[in-house]
Length: 284
Ligand code: GUN
Image 1 (spheres, rainbow, N blue to C red):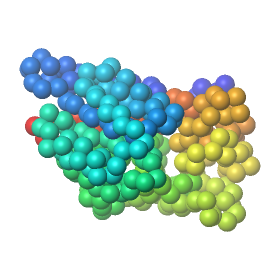
Image 2 (cartoon, protein in one colour):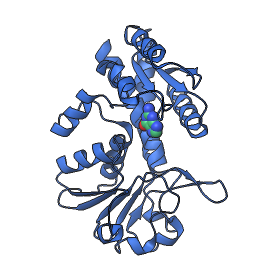
Image 3 (cartoon, rainbow, N blue to C red):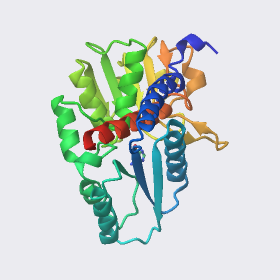
Image 4 (cartoon, rainbow, N blue to C red):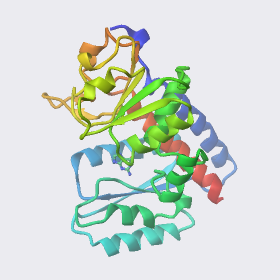
């Protein structure tokens, strides 16, 4: 494999985690309270359990306290709101993360909006997303923040580049499009209703896929020498972890590409850790 083409999110995330570990070490040396995250997981969706475990392990590795509260699928919306309000008022908790998706009987937007902006570690509340759109950055949602940091680390130019995003979710596509516009890229956002998708993807200097379908992006959809960012984390036909991009078949065609695993995923987690520390300092 041509390693020079690999955008190594694992390596860049480790650099960020070293910095965070040093900061936590200083906090501990001063005998101050340690930053604390509470994760709420509803039900036992397998993918969510994996993500939550990964977040908890990452917190523990850098020395951040992480409590996971697990409630059954049957929990009432009102009960969940009460739990979040209690965490909002708990001065020992710096950051609250409600793992998505939530069961259908719960209004996700209402739940997210219950989290106080001061503890919204995901950056999904309206004030944070509004500020993001306006170009005022304090805290940013983890995956878009991680992608921008990764591209910056590799000195990949954004200004004037045509970036095509596949996916318009509130978590990735929409915030990322705004960050890229603010970085002077020309941005096209494609989604499930886009006609003739490859007409757009073939124009991309940078193609970002956040679809959630294994090997959805094939070599024919990519321009020669494009940079490809794969946000997907999917099981393939053998139940192995696989991105949205048909990695083996596009590798010879691209200039650079993020692998799965080891690309965007570790950057999302590193960004989460940065956000916890940011909220801790804000709330001290
Ligand atoms: N589910 C998938 N990605 C995310 C994320 O970044 N944050 C939360 N809370 N849930 C998710």
